[in-house]
Length: 402
Image (tube, rainbow, N blue to C red; front, side):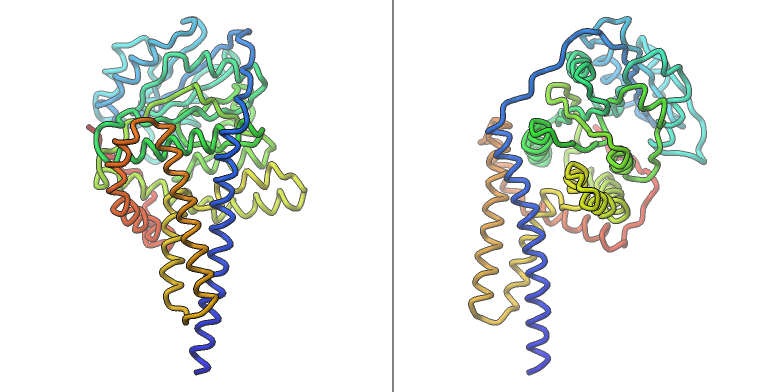
């Protein structure tokens, strides 16, 4: 009898903590979504002066897609003498460099297998040309293509005083499968209802690893100093600690070719999740403590992307809370927990519906939504492997492309 009481007390306490955590995270997202619909877009910066951009593309064995990116970069509608494209052929043993030679780009070939990785490639590349010759640096992944107006949009934000900018990360192959359709909606929620909302509120976005733009003076002073599997999160946390806010360029778009299936995406998501959870443990709480201690509320807010669960993890944890509540004895407390978790699921579903409407083609989204349970189970397995430490893969492995 006493053991049952202790178990009920402990379980109720655990569920209460989980409910508080998820309620805070979910209503934070809802508040941002409401802000997106209520607050007008910020006025763009001046188009003059015309800043000079260095574009850096870290590429390791990217022969399949690098040509598409080079073509889109050379077709950017911006004065041709005001940007230079640098392809970092990083430890390549395929035709990446040969393909790039067909385009008006500079090729930086790096052979250092003992120091492999995107972070190392970025750090090395910044030392291979004169940063003083440029006003800003744009970093784009090799499996992307870019909007022709990307530099015009970034130029305005640079002229508006932004030091670090995150571009709009879009899915370039939405129609390939139900998986890419769901990711398109998820990215729409992230870009519009999160990043753009924060930018309108004057808060910091976070870095997403692709479509990163920095004033050249920042990189000349700081360099690239993040080398973990979650190098984007790591560099983001460093910038926030240095007092640098991340702006967001909603009209400066990079289009990523997403994996078509769960099988294709698994290795990539394991690597991303592992890197993020590691940075969350080491830097997330530290940033929050710094913000609270110094009453620097923008710093405290900037810690939340590291501390709060991402959208799919929020839903999975809410379902977990519902499942745990089943083991409580019948009574008022159990009913309160059930109602609270159901309300949270409803709020999370409302975010998905909002993202679907913004993304357009709601019928396609509805069909893809039938596969959401499979997606959430897959994502739950990945998160459990990474949070528990069972997955410890720090080595980069290629995501299958098509």
